[in-house]
Length: 332
Ligand code: NDP
Ligand code: MG
Ligand code: MG
Image 1 (cartoon, rainbow, N blue to C red):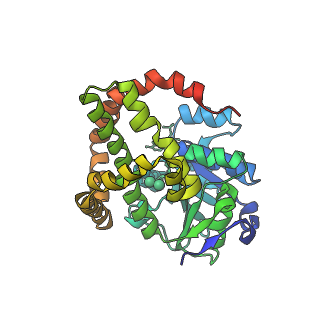
Image 2: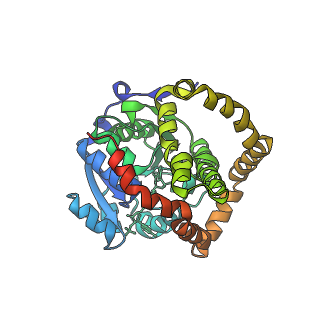
Image 3: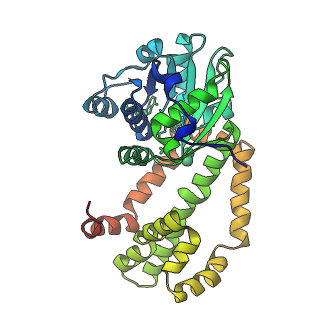
């Protein structure tokens, strides 16, 4: 059974006076910097260059500094630049300025688990991994809630690494929900498996397959979009609020019967075999190797994926329907 911590188990004190450098101001970086600051912690933002992030951080009331300047003054360094950029940022801007007793904090275990970053023995290395996108981490916090987080310790030089991980989790709002104790290995592997097979890859391809099939069969793209893409949010919201049973109670008996019989036909043993295959590829390190190689070549596959999706009929249809979708959203 997993160990889960909530607000009442955790105090911010251990991290309160410390200087925290948040490196990167993107999806997670902005959410962390703002939430930690609003929780009364001492945050500076460290960035590599002038540009969008620099301007956004400034607009949010931070005085961003060059990465190494933020690191030199920091007690706690949080890596919120893209996973593939972390190794170089570590090597060039962090490692030369490391002092005994500093903390290196990650939001995902990739670089530590696959040994792209190998910190010296005299620092703490721990992780607070939000189980949600950065903008949601911020949105939930400002509305009094919090996105659940995973916490893990890789290196415990001070003997207090877990206490500090939990304090940061609390500062983020994570313990308002719950912080689940895990390991770098478990977080890294499950995160990659989840995003590939369901959250990003699986769901996106399933929606695309259904949408494109309906359009090929001559149904109007607008009707197909509402059915196979837009409505998924409502179904997922029901599962989120009330579980599968809650969702099933809200849909028609016809939908339940069709769902039980046809779902297993579409997502079958072959699909499970492939989920397993993807998971094994993550576990063996083969996926990490492949992604590092792709990144080394300038991420051509990633870029092509973004371009193709941007031009796709589902995106075009979605943009056309944006106004209707916006108008229909609940107010307040
Ligand atoms: P982003 O892609 O949003 O990070 C962008 C930030 O990093 C920007 O400030 C950008 O600056 C800077 N940056 C981009 N490229 C480089 C580079 N080559 N060198 C230095 N800085 C760079 O990252 P995420 O927030 O998605 O991810 C951060 C960490 O959080 C990762 O470890 C990720 O796995 C983890 N995580 C992310 C989640 C998410 O919701 N996205 C969920 C849970 C964990 P500029 O504007 O100047 O380009
Ligand atoms: Mg994730
Ligand atoms: Mg991830």
